[in-house]
Length: 322
Image (cartoon, rainbow, N blue to C red; front, side):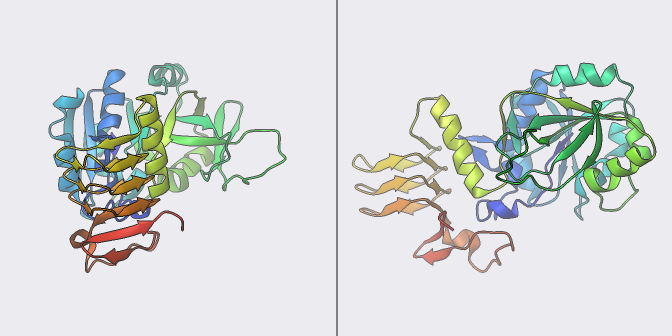
């Protein structure tokens, strides 16, 4: 199952007209990377949950064939949380061991290694973890003897502790017995409502500490930095989507341009994200900003966690320096 129901409030305004998993990363929807990842390890029958802008995920994934999978969509009229989503898909998932992946990650973690450990453990669940060496703002997973014991707060950015905290990657392998611990028909989260209860009742939750590349795209800053990191792997300085037009004398550096955008002559763009159909006018200089068309967000209330922006002509501009 791919969890794809989130609002993506910290990615606003990029998520005003689409949900977070449907935003493009170098021309491919984020959720498409997740589908291809699962297909690589033989997980080809996939359930996708939908809530915010559900049609944007359907448009991004289609029937799944282009990503090597077969999809079943299941909608949540009211958002149900990370484990409430599983309850909503209970009839599709409860017959055998299944994998759940968050729809906002790009990774090359070896899923087979985690599956092998889970299948040999008899555990209720296996959580795929990574060392959080940079002490980024991801909840600490408390582990002892190879088992998850609980979930703590965020790591201190500058800590004198020699140990490296572990963080949850959003990849988990579950035995159908997990449904004994998921509340029926209500909002619930795995790490706050399900796993603590299961652990308290003596269930074993295996901590599979993996290695590999892992990107989590939950904020605008992460979106740009990760897109640029993927571009660097391709030895490219910028990405321009389908139908976009860049003037011969325009300068574009370390930036992501979505579909149908126009960058006129002598305009310059640096470390920015330009949304669908945006026009950057002649001699205009854009740096460290996200820009979408004004009509996409006009009259819409920004989410509480969104960065602040201003209307500038036909564009809505969000500075990244805040």
